[in-house]
Length: 114
Length: 115
Image 1: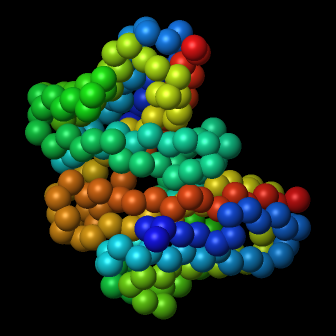
Image 2 (image 1 turned 135 degrees about the vertical axis):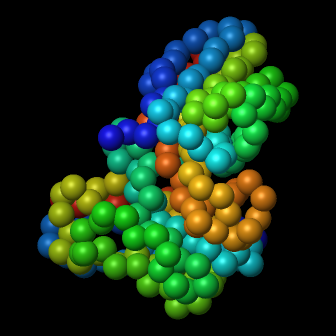
């Protein structure tokens, strides 16, 4: 009964490849996020969807494309992977309008680009 | 430009010691959160402070929001090895729907408590 789950946990791939990371939440939340955590542990928001609509789109290369097929799922597709894409990617969710803006994070996907 | 400056970046102390982590900004936040992250896991929310001057306690952890809502601190009393982890502050600017819950994180503090 994991609240926010991500697959895969680890992803090792070659430069230039295309890969996807999947996220699912069973909390009934309507807003989901993708964050990137770099090697220095700095966590930065990338995208957010509310009810399948893109509401936050930070300055991210357009090689990154999020997709939300429904409120419970948010996937991240990355084209033409580069060395600098190596990081841990976290999915998070929250219920819009909830007090205190609590976000629930998944366990992360560690992406290594060789 | 880093909106939230968190310090120190690293903290290595002995069990039983007290410590304080600071989170400072020149910007006003509508609320500020503290998260704790353990290796291989995602951040977990510890507390949210919303009112200037607010103090919240969670067992041995005391959180304070500055009067002007630009800074916050986390104080741990009598640290234990189980407190080891990455502590992150995160701010929200704007209220309710205007912010879409966008969190701006500090750089994090890696705390190691030695037995």
